[in-house]
Amino acid sequence: MNNNQSSRSDTPKTPFVDQSRCIGCVLCTQMCPNTFIMNDDGKSEVFEVESVEDSKIMLSGKRDLDTSTQSDSQEKIQDSIDACPVACIRWK
Ligand code: SF4
Image (cartoon, rainbow, N blue to C red):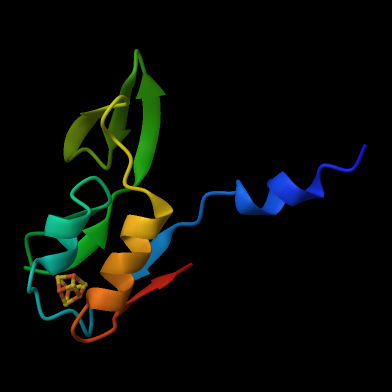
């Protein structure tokens, strides 16, 4: 009757990059290319999902991802957070 074991752990978390501290080393974009992208200012940013259509995820007008390959695991994202040399990525 009580399913609270899965309700919390299944909730996807979203990372956040403090761009004022990002040094543009590109490490996070290499570790999680489906989560982080370098912007025109040479700072990492997190994709914003705008919509999902026909198995394509539309991301901030930057590029589309196929849903079969789109997701970096929460563990991989956590690895990126831990690996960032200036510790400027955190969970929202
Ligand atoms: S790992 Fe950190 S410093 Fe390097 S690009 Fe990503 S957010 Fe910026």
